Length: 210
Image (cartoon, rainbow, N blue to C red; front, side, top):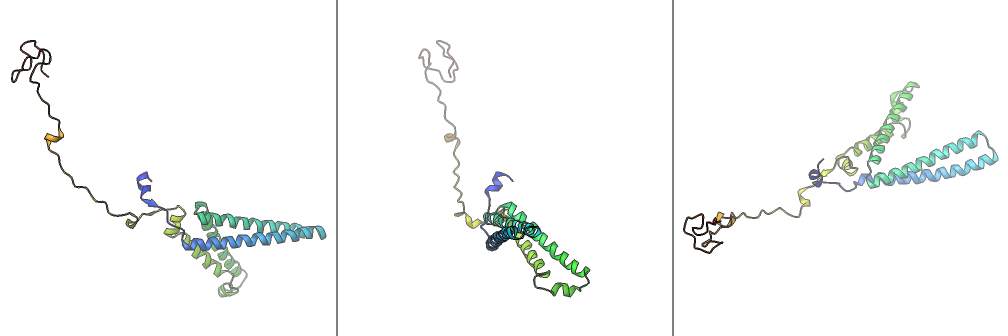
């Protein structure tokens, strides 16, 4: 994109849906960090009292939960500031959520339950996540959202300009004013003798008339 094209392009403001998703990511991130911290305390207590595999499992789980919480907070920052990597990670996360929902349906069918039972067994699995992630994916691919994250800028509308440009009237100049007039000397610059009309040289000293 040339600099001239870029001057006529602008980045839109943050869409309301992005603000809502950012707030949800902050809530999820803070919740995961709190839950992970509680699990870490329980893992320390289990390590002191019981030890063994239980404490190791708790340590692993709480580190994963805390890591997910930190990731959600970083993603919320990227969504709030309109970073491209945040948009990319959100799209990837929505696609993964849809794939996992489809896999849950496939596992239920392989286990012998019918399609209706697999879709209506619980409100959390697996149809609701598929619809939710599908709506998020469609929202992230809309024009304004893509433009906010720098994927494609929206053109500036005419209303952003202060007013129409008024063309100044053109007044052509005559050749008499556009070209400076040259005056022929009336006397020789060398000897001062008057110049005869049409003469190119002084008839006294022979100096060329300029």
